[in-house]
Image 1 (spheres, helix red, strand yellow):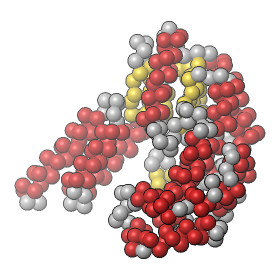
Image 2 (cartoon, rainbow, N blue to C red):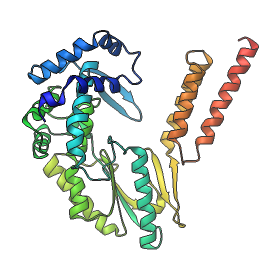
Image 3 (cartoon, one colour):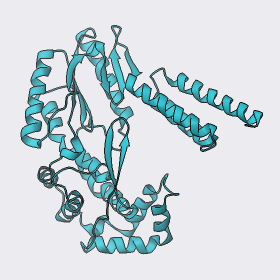
Image 4 (cartoon, one colour):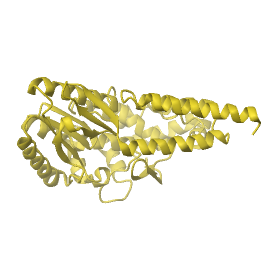
Length: 349
């Protein structure tokens, strides 16, 4: 596609309506909406004439569950990336990526990846006549900061993107002035990360012929009845990552039995001797949730957040913990907090 086909006024306006969801109260959204028509018109003109330059990143850290550096662009630049991803990247890359590449795609996500994993575990139980199969759980060390720009651009060219599309993506990739890595916080980075490991997906599915395989960004799981074969797979994956992608697996990479449980996407998944899959919250995640609940309780009791916010957090917790047996715990904690609040109001404190 050409730039004037991608960045039409209508496409940019549609991207704005998506970007503003949940952020209507933010300063960047409000300032953009004050002169929205003129801003979109100028963006469309600058982009089609290749005069567009990406704004300055705002850096901050998050600590859930580990420290990460997030680089956030100004609102208008996020709007441009939303437009490009929806109209150029997604249509082309969706046809290229394997079905079980589960992150950041329409109809995919953590729930999809979990369902696929559970389905594979149950299928292995039927195929092997029990829960004695093995898994290989792989994790890339510092994935986003380690993505090589030259390798990434080469993959994007082979994917069939036009010169106009490549010009825009080069602007984004080189916008941090770093020799490698793509910033957490850009929507384009999600698609770059999905494509970058596609070579490993093909290795596992087409050369190693692993039937039970699912990937969520840089976390991926292989299931097989033969432990020795999974050790060979690990060696092949490590070699391909090092030689072709300049990546390495981290210390969390391991081989284990399904009956002993595997950690994936924040939960532990265990295959029982009856073929049932049990999903539980990991101990570290449970501790973080308790701390978060204590923080919410403090804010709620001091009238910093209201009942509406509490209800929204409660619904989010219940959705996140669906199928783990921990939903009742969250509900009881929230109800207890409400009773304390009512008692506080009654006593006039």
